[in-house]
Image (cartoon, rainbow, N blue to C red; front, top):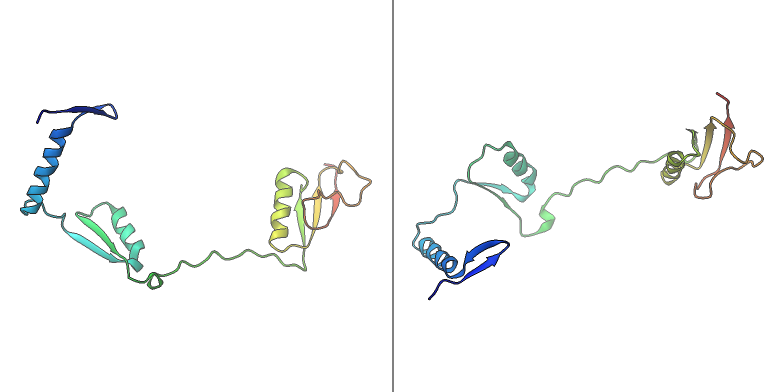
Length: 149
């Protein structure tokens, strides 16, 4: 068999030489000359955080194995993040609330349960004649008060 060379990702690879190297490696493994890495440190699936912390220390030698149970119900569920809620029967003061961030905060407050708000503005809104200067996407009514600084 003649050696055939091919280019793979910019490297010249000896196809038949690679095959013979793989064959030789498999023979050594079958004869017992190549053994798995030891020691093996084993963790249960419910202790995966402990396994990650053990690995994070960086002073381990060998393999770290996490054994999963047959049933996924045996794994602990992570608790959900608590939901932030605002009182529906309260009024909230929002300072400088007609800018982009203020409007985003007002929408977030409404999604969290706020039903009513007060705006404290530095200047009078552009349409001072209107009693409701609320942009249409803010989902709760508010009154406003302006002060010259």
